[in-house]
Image (cartoon, rainbow, N blue to C red):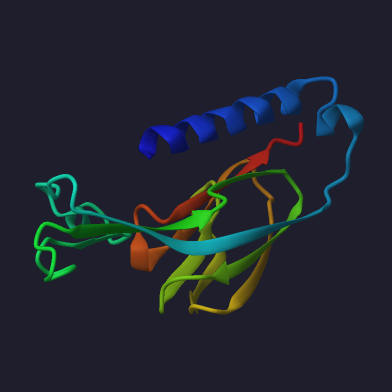
Length: 171
């Protein structure tokens, strides 16, 4: 999963870099900052098996965003069956132009409590933290004043529940 996410992010960055510096870039076209809306889902993905041994390391020790129900607890009738899960934002990588007003329409599919916020490229808070709950949509808006990576974070499931919003430099 890490390799797949890294490859997706690398591809997104490559395309973004080409668009940012090429003759069709926002700077070359003189595009003015605009409004960009992303529809983001907060989801939990689960998988269960009794076909392979359970991991030796409990995934919950790696991240608050991982879940694990060990053999014997998941399904007492099947003592070898176990389950893992992870919380994530989907999409996990987005791109905007520096200066754009970014709106994230976040729908919570799973999780009774998420503590979400957006960190700016310089480490400051672009959107203060708020609590979100299952079955509700939350709309957050910020201006991508800085070039670089904005990070949508869930403190409750950190460090693995994050999404990147890449702000392409305006010049």
